[in-house]
Image (tube, rainbow, N blue to C red; front, side, top):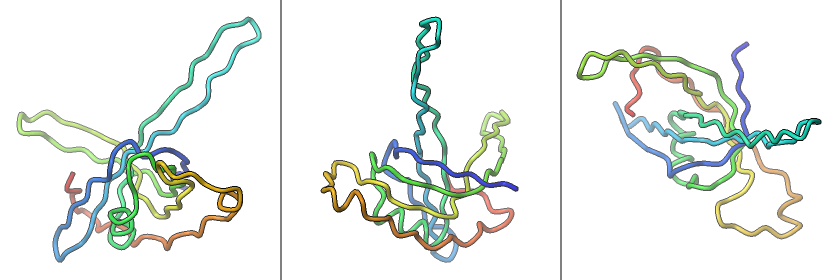
Length: 139
């Protein structure tokens, strides 16, 4: 099974592109952090932040374009996908990205919640259509 579930903060405003036949593609950078801790011997282990690239297609990408901003806290579901390409100098690059299937807001950047809003469940978004096979990402 290829399944990824992340809760993290959006590190920059989404990159949005429209490709063939007005298909929307959105890319976000999501930061997840594992909190630091102290070992029994007193050694401090610092926080560890990982950055993830998440790609959304079609309707999901349009929702990202309209609502997602830097600093938002999101829950993302998707699957891992690797790809490689050669740059203009002929150097081979490889990356692993998350193809987003589902997106839910946990909190908005700069928004202050009341107790009632904090207790309210977040409505799930609709699953994204799969990415076209063999199609390059425009990022």
